[in-house]
Length: 329
Image (cartoon, rainbow, N blue to C red; front, top):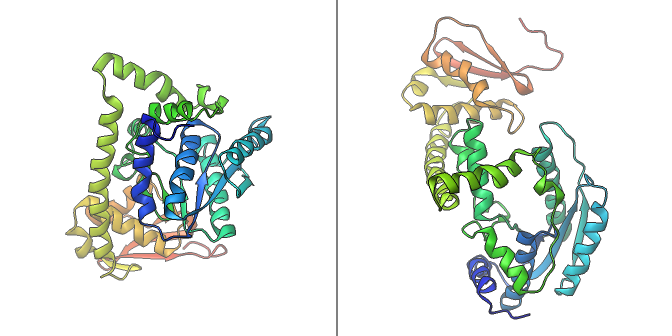
């Protein structure tokens, strides 16, 4: 395998700045599904790890959603061994279909990732998402009427997770695998048009390229970056406001002075602080609470997930969590 072919060089250059920030002997998990993106990640991570003295652990997730998923995991393990990986963690994801197959599988997958981090006392987890994944996510978010947070896509660094290929197209990861003579697995789900992401990838993006012109993926990725910068600034503003208030009794006068984009973030933080489950509050949940601030007509309280109750009393927004056996009055 030549390690200086164009695609491999580009990917090695992409991963290097992240490795430079890690201490020698750091334990680094690498998520590998067997597809081109993750196999390319596994290849270049292994090549670069020796230059930085890093200890790599390949992590394979068996979702159990396909008949031969265990066989795919075993074959991927075999390929990783040939690449020089001595530590390979295979975790079985327990997928509970609560809010759609894609998001449910993602949630289960990240639980396995967290388990691997804890098992190996690792602090870093590499993922092979590309610019194409980012563009697909932006289009899906637009179709669903999402806000800036969702439309801003994935962060290159988010907690322990690092995505070094977010500025690189999928054609490069595929080329890298060919250059390295590594056979990759094609997930049948990636061609199943029952999934919205597949329709975006196989139909919508090519149609946009044909009708509007080339460069759509780059443009959508740039949009995600711009929105992410805006969203981060708004989050920081909201965090500063939140640190100065009593989240269970918020002065309406304080909220009224804030732009709605900041106010909604402060309210969301307060609701979670009151006991709502993480990720459970949508824009639809916030609408009646916003009305308590900006369109007050004496309306009653609003009930939210987690038993959180929000009402306006004496010029304040009151947030409290009702106990399961508490009777509403």
